[in-house]
Image (cartoon, one colour):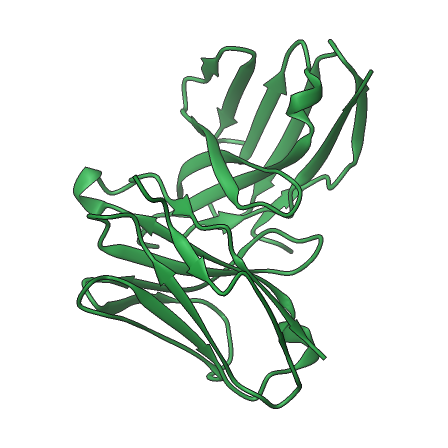
Length: 111
Length: 115
């Protein structure tokens, strides 16, 4: 079983739609959680951190459920420019600053 | 300000050869990590260096090695290349002085093709 699992997609949605991505992690010693965005053939870039209380940044909302070891990302009012791969990332306690990535979920926003 | 820079951007090597990839972190960042990303997968952790010392190693064979220099730049070396080593190699720098969970900034990567 992979440490961090995501549905690879692709998710094809119309512009303006709301889309949700899920991620599960296997190590209960997981300490910190993030969503990264990666455009085609580019490097990953931090989209947002994920806090236990949930957090929002504009059209993006991240949620964490430690009991279920589950992380989510909600994108409202999708834009064409949101098309990218969204990577779920976990840092484990005692793991230094090592990032453990999921496979990534591909999003395609269409007209 | 310059971000994380990696060189070369693209590389084609033959099986059995060795390769050296280079990374310059953001100015002031003392921690450098290396990741391998094969097509269709998320990046996989290879090494982390901080203050010129190895602080973490992923599940990669001994053919993979790295080092960090006094100016905090880093090299990743891969010996006896295999076809399966074809991937995008990413370098990330961070500033632990900003806190334990300082944001990692990635370079544009080196795309290695082994033929």
